[in-house]
Amino acid sequence: MSIDLRASIDLRPMSGFQWIAVSICAFLNLIDGFDVLVMAFTAPAVSNFWQLSGAQLGYLLGAGLLGMSVGSLFIAPWADKLGRRPLILLCLTISGVGMVLSAMSATPIQLGITRVITGIGIGGILACSNVIASEYASSRWRSLALSLQSTGYAIGALFGGLFAIFLIEHYGWRSVFLVGGTATLTMIPVVYFLLPESMDFLIAKQPTNALIKINKLAAKLNLPVLKQLPEKSDALQKNRSSIARLVSGEYLLKTVWLWLAFFLVLFGFYFVMSWTPKLLASAGQTAQQGITGGMLLSAGGIVGSALLGLLSSKFKTTHVQAAFLIITAITMVFFVKTSGLPGYGIAVGLLLGVTVNGCVAGLYAIAPTVYDPSVRTTGVGFAIGVGRAGGILSPVVAGFMIDEGWQPASLFTAYAIAFTLAALVMLKMSYAKRSAPDTMEATADH
Image 1 (spheres, one colour):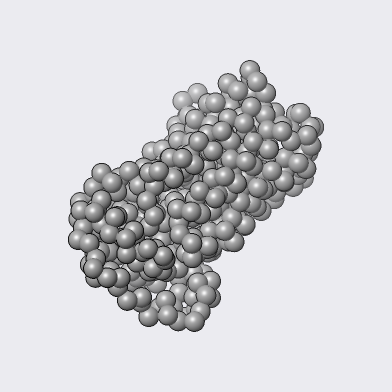
Image 2: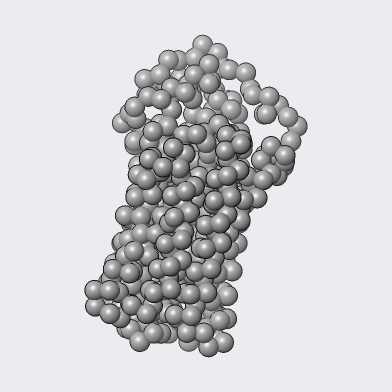
């Protein structure tokens, strides 16, 4: 019976209830986009306020990513035991409080600590929200639904830049953190009243009152109700932890390739998104022009995330992802060189935004298809966590390179190598997936 419910969700047209669930998850990513990149938008102002070196600023830029890695690795896996929805509520509280405390920081060290706290919450939210979106989307629209999560992230980053320019000018850099924290905390009642628990989680784990909860969701989805709970799958009865299964023979190779892809892509992505405003300012533009350059990347990301989802409904997702990665590497080589040229700078900035955000959207679309429901949030959380390790190293490494005299154009060219290597990993994953399809895998690759 559980297989029938899963198949019904996969094969039926998307209902309004499903789109509401997907939309709330996208809005959670919108808030996270603001919270994650708030440090990049405020970097010039914070750096001037405390007279920070490149390495010191790099540590601050990496602090939030460190927290996100901790949240993805150690908080998100609890969603496979306690539920996706309760973890999102907890992580919204952690993230919101962290943002408010960031606004009150008296020293760079305090700001770094509060950025770690914020990141812990964001890491848990991203893993859980992407899994819920994938589980409530039908087969036809799953790739698009997952890409919309990254679109929400890009919208949050874009409007974060717009708000940052206004807020910094009129109220100072602390106000940017305070606005972000307030917006995050306001999402708690929205999630509590409107976001449903994962149907796959209820069927797989069967918590207290699972049958009642499943049937309530089935009614909202216009699906047949169950008279009794289905038997738990054999995989769930194995005496192994979710984490151990990720690196077992069942998933080992797929997990390794997925982790490597996340590490490389987020290593390059967080360099681009974190350092662009500061590097453009260093290349001779004003601080406001630097923020505008960062906003161009986010504006392109709105298109890129949706475009990847649409292309993935027509072509194999891993092939689309590889193409985006290669175009990103090429575009990075020309970005700084053209940033000051009227017309060309805007076009190249938008193109880079389209492709670099599309690369991340592709990873989030692919990751949930690799694992079954019993370990899906753990699998996605660990993939994101490993990726965050690359994100943590990225701005710190760039900070040391800047202190050693590296110029912006050389930095962008060097980081383009990460995207080139990630494209090779994607092609390897595409080949490996042909021989061993998974539960939801076929729905993401067409």
